[in-house]
Length: 119
Image (cartoon, rainbow, N blue to C red; front, side, top):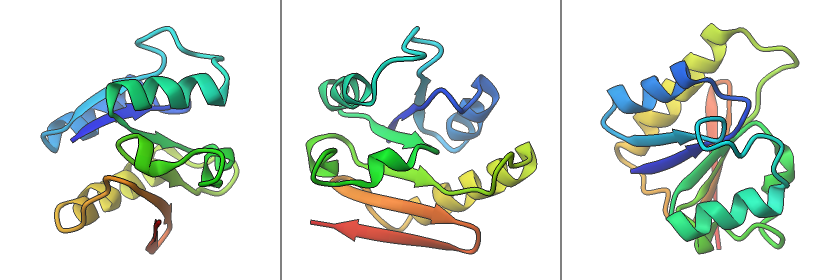
């Protein structure tokens, strides 16, 4: 699976995706830090990459249609989450992905559950 990790994810977090066999690029690696949400979404659509973000603005499927790109994943964490929590939630996401396709869907990952929204 091809992922684009928003600027709130470090290169180390990209390694978690890579260890699971996925192609993950970070917004920082591509010098897209500070890009508007619309521009980032357009890049993900052009590259057919699933965006993984902490930004709840992407939860509006009328503005950001997950079917037009590789899907959208929003990880909802408490304010100032620890790196360990973020890694745990990412691993839960990757485990869920093994048996559930994300293409065209919006996933909201929360501690203890993943909500799936399809058109």
